[in-house]
Length: 190
Length: 190
Image (tube, chains in turn yellow, orange):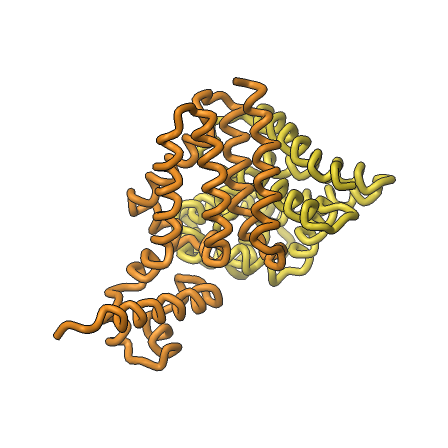
């Protein structure tokens, strides 16, 4: 029997919210479907109706992040030069990291999530494309190391628990300045 | 009966080496003392003779990293100004990250290790002191965000699996340049 889409969407959203809260508290590994059901005050069968495994929930939680990153890569790929592609990419990367900073703070250290991303080529392809595009055309050590500093720095800083009080706009401004500073090192090599 | 120190030291070192290999392959959570014993071709009792728990092994593996970081913080604290302290700290942080990059690559994403560090004040105090000193005297958003970009970028880049082929000296040079570039943003605010 067909269920109204809105109702199903909202039940899914509630499962995802509860899962995220429990993942943050216990880690993905130590969170069970039963714990998610208990948290929501529903049966485990009700959770199974929405998601067939914990991995499915984790995928649903990280999917919007990768959708955004994938869109950033696609937009950057339409830019006329490698330099303008890199600028568009970094700007999109900062926006995405900030938009998802709370979810990413929960997941950035989780090995279950890392393993899952590796197993899903549609996710790992995005991170590879991202790293390639930030490195730019010149794959020498300066560009590769500086590119990694930009990516790991943006992700690490936007999810830094010590900076939870910094608002999104301020974070965006300083991360943009940091990235521009680092890109000067790459420009010197071009 | 007293055992020769060298022999005991070497048995400890063999356990640590085997543990690190297995941690890298399976994660800390999924590695048991029995697996470590099997890998070494010894009994579990022989491993227990050296370490009373898996946590003890993890502490023994990360201890040298925190010893080095703690020394870096102590040396930086003797510098006459906050600016020279920050310079000494960043230089020491880069050296430490590179010296331990292979061990840190195994552990940087491991939640068991993160939990253990939080439980050991002698470890978490070092990371707090590090973050405070890189931020410097002016705790405004520019200095805090840039400081986090330097720390998370140095750790993230030196443990980036895509950069495993970059030799230590090249990595050190580019990370130093990256940090100097970022510090210019802080200098503009001082």
